[in-house]
Structure formats: C-alpha cells, structure tokens
Image 1 (cartoon, rainbow, N blue to C red):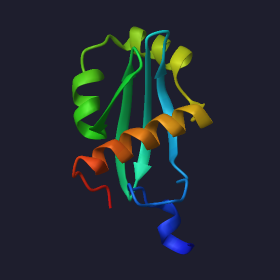
Image 2 (image 1 turned 45 degrees about the vertical axis):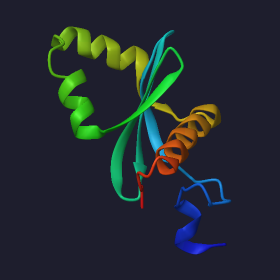
Image 3 (image 1 turned 180 degrees about the vertical axis):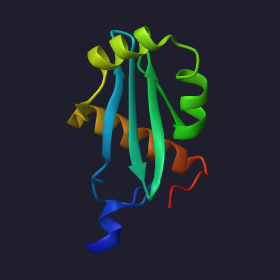
Image 4 (image 1 turned 30 degrees about the vertical axis):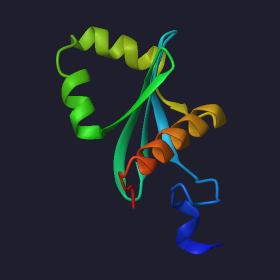
Amino acid sequence: MGGDDDNRIGPDCGVRTRIQGQVLRRTERREVAIFLADGALWIADFIDGRGELIDAATWIRFNCGSASIDHAYRRMALESALPLSEGLVARIETLLRSDAAQGFTWW
C-alpha cells in the first residue's frame, strides 16, 4: 500500500488516513471540525457525542449567517484555530467509514 491510496477511506481500506483539518468549534456539548476528503471540504459536527457529516457550504450557510459580529469574534477566539486531535480524527474516520458502509462513496 502506498501512494494515493494511503489517503482513501473505505470499509475495505486497511490504512489509517491522514485527515487534514481544523477544529471550528469546541464546547462542552459540541465539537465541529472542517476537513479535506478527496479534494472536497467537509464538516464533522458532533453534538452530545453523535456525529454527522455535512458539506462545508451547507453547514456554513446554516451555522454562520445570523450571529452578530461581536459574538462571532468571541466564539472564534475561544473555540477555533485548533489542530485536529488524534481522538477527533478517529471519530471522523468512523463517520466516513459508516457512510461508506451505507453506500455513500467519498472517493
């Protein structure tokens, strides 16, 4: 195994992927990360431990449009610009594999 296949995720894939991304929000109940999967930006949104994958444009449209600028700046300073932890990467990989098992193809 090597080359481009090292970044692929799938139920039959035996390699751990190298997800590129960043934490957008982190609170007691919620953790949101933006990451690159096969050239496309995606959001992994975990609320109370339950995760969901959403394309980045849709997530931003519904989660970033209505907050006041002061609120947005405060939230950005407190919750963002954090690298993805190994634990969060593992949770994202689990979501990707779960979607692949349900027939959604990421590559």
